[in-house]
Each structure stands twice: as structure tokens, then as C-alpha cells.
Amino acid sequence: MSSSFPSMKPDVTLSLTIPSSNPSHSFKPEERSVKLIQLLLTCANHVTSGNIHRADTCLRRISQLASVTGDSMQRLAVRFAVALANRIIRRWPGVYKALNHSEPISPNLGWAREAHSMFSKSFPYMTCSYVVLTQTLSKAMSWDRVIHIIDMGSGDPQLWAQLLTKLCHGPMGPPEVKITCVSINKKLLDDLGIILMKEAKSLDMIFQYNPLNVTLMDLTKDMLDIRPGEALAFVSILNLHVLLADDDHVDMHFKVNGDKDPTNENKKISEFLSMLRSMSPKLVLLIEQESDHNLTSLVDGFVEGLHYYSAVFDSIDTIFNIGEISGEDRVRLEDVVGKEILNIVACEGLERVERHERIARWAVRLSRARFKPVNLWLGAMEEAQQVIEGCGPVGYKVVTHRPGLMICWHDRPIYSISAWII
Image (tube, rainbow, N blue to C red; front, side, top):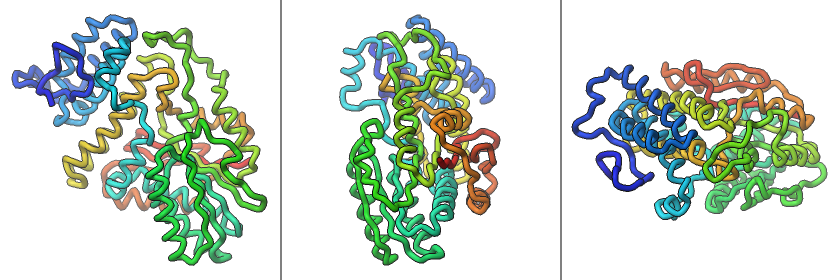
């Protein structure tokens, strides 16, 4: 790993560190954070206008102020600077592919799903979300005898094992349950099947597992094997936004030819929601990142990204400082988050799959597809709040926000959760 920002050739895999003669020593932490934000936004503007020399000057200055071992703003600046460097280099496909021939920068899984297995206790975003999901599903389907849950991409055994346990202790006794999981990660599918089959056996429950090794883009109704009499539910955890990927009408230098018309819905997501509705599901549950990273303007999206991920990095910084995670785990978590930032900033067109949108936009989209919002169970929200409070006074909170609820870091939303019926 290099000790300074490279000057001879671009290497977008390097992390930025503070040189020994570091001018950041002349800044107080608050001043340094403001300066980093200014430099990052200036750099994004230069990248957009095609002024690579000025962008390079900004990146060299950022490299002197940012650090993978610094405070949360310094660490965040590293990730955004690397993403901007990637975007610059992608103007020369040959150079870019030579430097990144073995590692695509379109993530396959949301960062929080991967992080959840490591930090579920001290980093409770997903834990709270799972409480709400399992409570809502078990209440809505407590009197159904044949239940089919379609997991659109999470593949987390903790979520589905919890649900099986709740359903088993419902008012009618154990129902017959089928879980279909859609994922391009075959190992994830195989591991999930082994765990859930073992859990169902221990509960003496009739259970069927249906793994689908495909993307949501390629998913068809026939693959889901929907049968008459099944109480059907669809669950998407940080994944439905991949269907918003579009060509964006961009040229080879990522200059957008016109702004998106908010009334002109992406065809793929419209068709997908219509397909879901045609199967008459009893419930559709959606968790998404509560931010707007699906903008055609690099600078606008960059501002959104800085605001959103500064909250994420601040929360990581806090749990590290109170000793909830090790330095090694902190780096691993930030690496996963960094991949998401990289996709948002460096990619365009169909390669940019991390296209997060706020709950209000999802509400418009689902309403147009003739879905109706339903209130999440009060008990689920109360239990989620208890999970938050059990983590200590570190800034997490659950707030209601029509048509669902949000899990926040202080007053900054991280996730939105909503439930829909036809």
C-alpha cells in the first residue's frame, strides 16, 4: 500500500494516507472536514466539466488531508476520492480495465447485508429492520396454512430462521412454508438452504426451499412456482433499486444528455411491479436506503452521497470509539461501504446499480402500480425501538414516516421500511 497519492500513474486501488510532511496539521478537525468537503465538491465539478488537470490538483490536495486511519470525515473522503479517481480513469477504458481487470465495481449485495453478520449487535440497522419484517409477516399470515415467502435478494438466514420460529408458534400451529430466494450468489443460496432445512426440521415444520440463481432483472413469474392456495409475500431488502438501472443517455465521458423526467418511469421496474401484482400477493415488504442516489447530475448525486454516507461513517466511528468493534472489523465494514460509494460515483448506465431513492419516491412508484400502503404493526415498532435502546445511547432511533418508518442515526435517516398490499 502506497504511503502517498501516486503521481506517476493512476492506481485507483490505493488508499489515501497522510504524508509525513502533512499540511493537515495546520487545520483543526472541524476546519479540515469543511476543507475536505469543499475539495471533494470542487473535484466533482471539475470531473463533470472534463477539466482533468484541475481535478487531479484537487485529488492531490485531498490526499494530504484524508486518511484511512483518521477521523470519520477523513476516512469518508478517502472513499469518495477513490471513486472520483475511478470515474476519471474510466474515460480511458483500456487503462481502466488494465488496472481493474479482475474486480468489477458493481456490488452484488448491499453493504448492510454483508456487514450485518459481523455487527448485528453493535450496528443495529438490519436487526431492527428484521424485527419489523418478522413481526409484520407473522401477524399478516398468522391464520394462513400454506405460506410462500419470496426473498428478493437478501439470503440472510437469521431473518428467515426467526420468521420460521414465529410462524411455528402462531395461533394455528406450524403452517406449511415455502421460501424462495433469488440471488446470483450460489454459495449464499446453498448455505441458506442448509440452515433453513435444519431449522424447519427442528421445529417439525413442513418446509420447502426454492433457490433461484438469477438476478432480479432476469426473474420471471414461471420461475417462482406459485401454486393455488398459497398466501404469498414478497420481501426486498436493499435490492429492488437495482431494477432502476438504465442507460441514462450518457456518452463515453459520462456527460448526461438531458435531465431525467420524474414522470417517465423506468420500464423495467414498472414491468416488475406489474408482474408482482399479477400474482396477487398478500403483502410486499420493502427496505431501501433512505437517500437519493439516482440522479443524472454527478454533483447533485455527490452531495447526496456525502450527506448520507457521512451519517454511516459517523455511526461506525462511534461504535468503534466505544469499543463495540475492532479496528480490523471497522476497516472491513468501511471497505464494504466503499464499494457502494464507488458504484454510485464512478459508474453510469447499466453498470450503476446502487440507485437509492427515498421512501416518498417509492410510494409514488408503488401507487402507480396499484399497490396500497398498510400500517406496520405497532408491536413491531415497539420491539424495534427496544433493540435500538439496548445498544446504548449512541444515536440510533426509529421514527414513523408515512407510508412506513425510518431507522435513523440521530436525525439522519439510513433505512426506510414500508409494507404494501393490492
